[in-house]
Length: 122
Image (tube, rainbow, N blue to C red; front, side, top):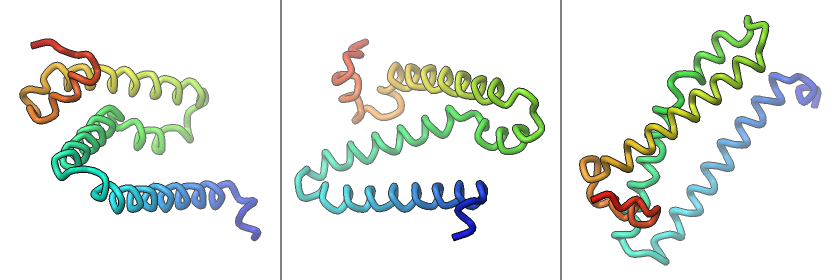
């Protein structure tokens, strides 16, 4: 395939493969998880995954789209990428701490997260 030598096509194939692998593993997990767990455990797991996805999306701070827009014209590409990684990492840490500290407000059913991580603040 001649398209494998073009970086644009190669990266798009990697992205498609990643999406297919993620969807397939999710389908596999959620197909077999109900056979080994109670409905309560499945609900808590689903809520934890949804909360984690929300925190991840919020911690990006729009850098994913900003990099697509501004990275091609940047002279110091590595510096810009590292700055975005550091800022997103700090945002993720801060949002996670706030989420765990105020868990009794967001979702009292997920207080098990605090118990499992040692965050007993009550």
